[in-house]
Image 1 (cartoon, rainbow, N blue to C red):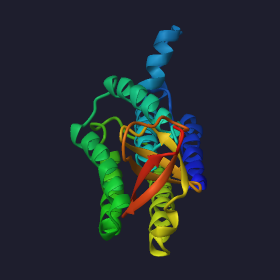
Image 2: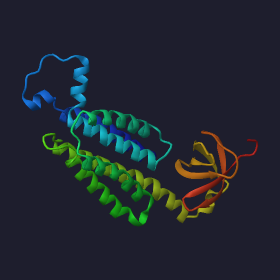
Image 3: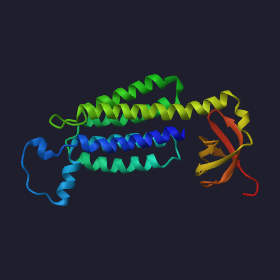
Image 4: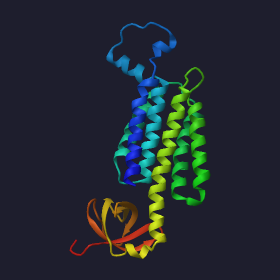
Length: 241
């Protein structure tokens, strides 16, 4: 799971690296010689490029996707929220097609559905990829085009990141159950997100959804597993807490 999360972080960085390659200044696109801009004008010009806005939007989707599937990793979620704020600023400078934007946003819950429902993993994932690709093509009104190579790169990066992260997390937990979930009982787990009473814990390098039997437990506290219910743990505070 850690390797998958790291891959997703590297994927986020990769998208940031390729952004200058496909983000052509608006003046060059229009073929007009512009006078010297102020810093504010340069910032608006940069974020007003449809390629930059698209990259920021997909960074937000990818970061939030990784955070939802692997709660407690924090870094992808922080990147996703920051990218989302910049993306909405950039989109506000452009002529956005609401249908394209909606399709890209809808891809997020479809990816999450595929991660948590094995029975619909393939159809949900394929639908999410198709929705992301179509939404990317129609994100802006005619005249504001995203480079097709950039769209291909983004769709591939997001899809591969999702498949790696979701497969490693969900498959690892199901393998644990198949080989005997009773083996987890009485193991010590570390709280990753506060249990009030529900949250997440780390057990042998894996993040699990958990529920505390009574009271509350804060991040980094240790709890003991008392029961396993599917992919959800029941835990209690260690003696002395």
